[in-house]
Amino acid sequence: MNIREGYIKFSYQWKQIDCNIPDKCYNELNKRRDKLYNLNLIGAYENGIGFGNISMRIPGSNKFYISSSGTGKYKKLLPKHYALVTGFNFNENSINCTGLHPASSESLTHAAVYESLYEVNAVVHIHHLKLWKKLKNKFPTTNPLIEYGTSDMAFEIVRIIQTNENQIVVMGGHKEGILSFGEDLPEAVEVLFSHYNQLKC
Image (cartoon, rainbow, N blue to C red):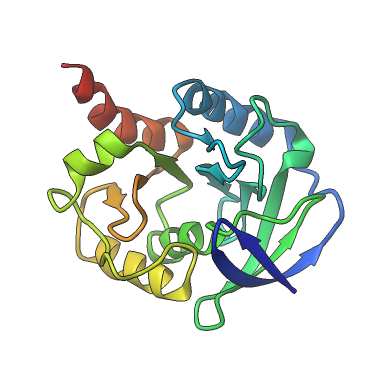
């Protein structure tokens, strides 16, 4: 099955059943997402296309909970708005997921981080044009010819984070897109805000 979010098509095997996200994970994800949403770092454009997502790894595995496709427009997410990614294939640009709604098309990008860095347990993807312009090419930046949500982007993320110690990646071909990650959600968000807060200085 294929899905289109924005303009990128990817393949997925989707079990449309409740992913049964634990309360602890749900509350932690929503606490951080609420803050990002209120700052318009996660949201939706006027044309209805959502942007930004947030995820948390199940410790000891490459499975992770992530905000579902098309949820950027919602101020508050319910448990049904999260999906569990249970598998992925970079070469085929495909994921396996469970949830009442399919996982975000950015899931493969999150998966690339988890696959590469075992110590990372949380990934945040936001949009902010001013911050994107400030960080672009000054911090690890993906090839501008590579589109988001593709297998090429997943491989590019793997390449970049394995050769850099920064916990933030600028998506060169995905205007406004920025990725941050950490050992847990507080750290992933703090990495992002360490740069975002400088815009106010």
